[in-house]
Length: 222
Image (tube, rainbow, N blue to C red):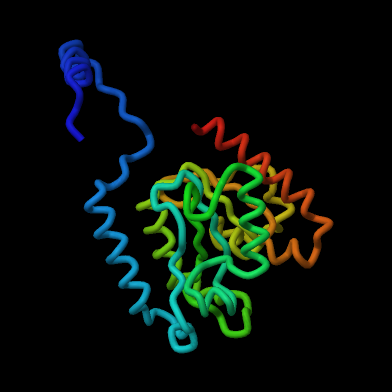
């Protein structure tokens, strides 16, 4: 986008005064055409990926879904059986609960939030991701973060939290704090996975506290 006349004059005055112009910490997002090409390249790479053995047993790769310019990014651990069939993260009962959680803080799937997993292929039997699988897939998520440039990441579940933050800490111990992810140091907040909340509905109140905390942090960031 062309620089405005006021911005050019301001830069000229600052240079004349020997003052370095201030630049925002948040790096600019790729231009629209470049971003479209980058997303297509990433989609193709994930579809062809053979970095780990999961490509042998998956039905469909699951890259993610939602607004590619969203300011919120939700990250889980891996696709389940239904996600593997549909090629979309967080569907079925857990997905319905996640959608309800997001609506409670003003987010709507496909509109103002992007939803992804660390792994892009389903582990057989819905087992936990193996370290080598995370190592193979995490660069794809990092590229998604670079393309989306979210203001806030919401990590759902213990396994997603541990892998994103490279910690063995408990989810309970990491709740209620702002963490950072990746080279962009994107603020990250953790909460419970919706599948866990379906098994333990008594913890939904804690998840609501996490969501309110995330909303308040986002308001400060914005």
